[in-house]
Structures are given as structure tokens and as C-alpha cells.
Image (cartoon, rainbow, N blue to C red; front, side, top):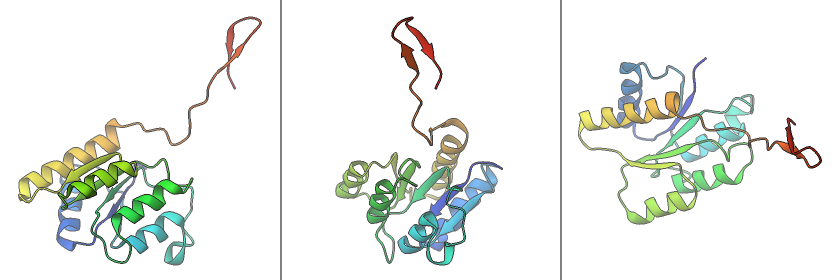
Length: 161
């Protein structure tokens, strides 16, 4: 199974364009979609209607719109980063907002990237294609902290832990 993307998007047109760009470019057929911030948190934390979802089966990357109903995208990002189950998942803010405060707050909350959705159809498709390619084929973000080798102080040799 390929890497899974969680798309958190309330605009049905942007959702359809994003999924179309992924399909057209054979990026992944493994995309889960949530349409508001509360549903996204339920999905990630395996609560509410997603209570039976395996908590170990997290997405490889999250594409997060910031202007969401129920729970704002910045609050979703804040909660993702504050929970050890989701803190290391790469999050890309994919949003129509060009407000400096949204961009700055996204990076303050440790978003991995901030991409403003292009208005032009072809530019939007290309941006989504590049995001998908990077986060599903190029990036190898570790999901667990790296293991530090131990050095034997008497022999100065590395030991595997």
C-alpha cells in the first residue's frame, strides 16, 4: 500500500480538483478526506465516527485548509502538534488565505509548508501535483525519533541499541 494522504478541505470544488490532480498524475489512490476541523480531529484521534479506526494507521502527510468550519485549521494544527500520536506527521497548509498572520501562525505551530492555492486551474493542478510528488515519493520524514548509537567509552566503538 502506498503512502496515504489526509486531505482536510471544506470546499467541494477544491477537493475535487485536488483528487483529480492526484489521479491524473498517478500520485496515490490512498487519500482520505475530511470536510471540517472537527471531523479531521475525530479521524486523527480515532474518536467519534472514527473510533474504530486503527490509531497506528496514520496518514503520511496532511494537506490542511485553514478556513474550516467547526474547528479552525490553525486549531487543528495546534492539536495535531500537541498530541504524541500525530505530532510527527508532516502538515502542509494548503489554503486560499494569503494573510501574513495565517502564514506566520502556521509556521509558529510547526507546519512543514504553507502553500497558497493558486486561483488558476492549471496552476492549482500543478501545485497539487508537486505537493503530492514531494510528500509521497521524495520525502522520507521519520515517524519515530532516530536511535542514537551508544559509544563504548573503553573501546570507543559504536554499539547498536
